Length: 318
Image 1 (tube, rainbow, N blue to C red):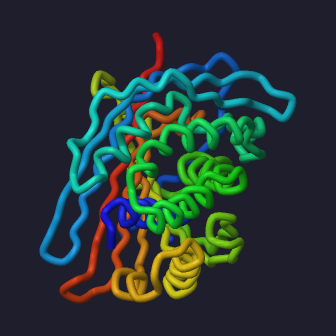
Image 2: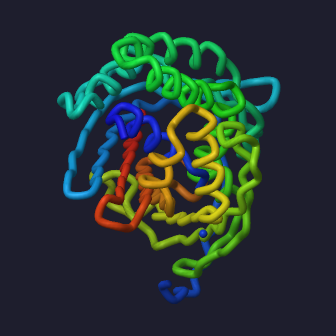
């Protein structure tokens, strides 16, 4: 499979939606307490390690950006701005240009609107984000052959449609805040729940998801803290693998990727996700988030495996 097409397909697989230790007996209430005026500088790092057959490569990018919370008629508005890229991967089989094109986008996500209780409500400005991202990626697509260019455009259009951006923002917020707000969990005890995702990017197929929430224990919010004011929380999830693989492969084929290439590379697509969070339980103010998504395809000698790790570190003004 062409390396740029493969990069797009794996990026799509990595957007799959986000299922022990014995309990300690201590129960911790988790309350949402974000307020207008809250600000944070976020240090972001993304590392991707990919293996296909006997070949492997990796890429790293890093950026800083700002988060601002303000009052909104629906509750709270969360804006992200001022993206400054501090590290980009070297060109690797064409994928370096893919990330360089992304780096020209300074507003990589739309505004999120959440309730005062921490429930996700909607996004705003998704059309602008989609237009900026598409414009940045167009020079990359213009340099490839016509058939691959059209299929890559179709895949990216599916990923950037307003419904898909809303879905991605909803899933990310729920994984790091929304699913936790209002719960009272015993340290070490898993809390299992069944969820479902209906992604416009995957043709609005409803995919069941198995989710597990757990408070691992208490931890310091920052390395400078003398006391363990925060808790470490862990979420693991796995979509129904058969339905996920079918929806993913159908999208690739609708986008013009030859059926034999889809079957050879993604015949047994398996996606697993985990999220590790350090947050203050009194407010769910975030200090550290790490999201790991593993996508693997055909298990044979020519199969592929990609692990993408995204890390967010939040710094608040004194």
